[in-house]
Image 1: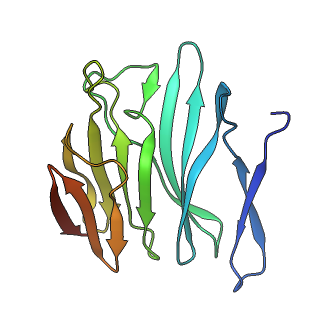
Image 2: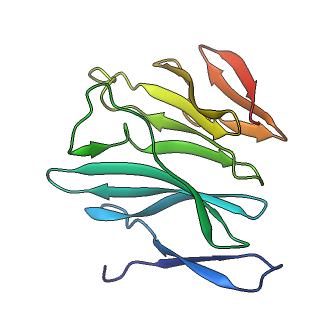
Length: 164
């Protein structure tokens, strides 16, 4: 849309940039891209769209060496699937490895109750797609990736798994 910032991605190795899309404008309806994260040549981000009737939250991983999209998946699977929703809510944290494996924490609007926020920790790697944890006691911005060790805080404890 008018006034939206276009995003491009590239690697030094290829010296070619790829058009990624338009950055999400704060406070605007419609859609755009947000939460850009790099892992080697991999760019991960959230693609968001909202209207009066529909909402979509998707995570995308692009290999900047080739411009190929490796993943384009919803932020989670709603309890009651609806034609008006894709994903469970916005990603609050994203990490990506150089091989395209990705993990994220999403705010799960459907499972939240009142003022109590609910979060899901999800991953896609060589083992497949999986829900790692969920609940009201997940610290939303605690997601960290150290080599292949994925860590987050839940219930005041440090949780971890291997991102393959």
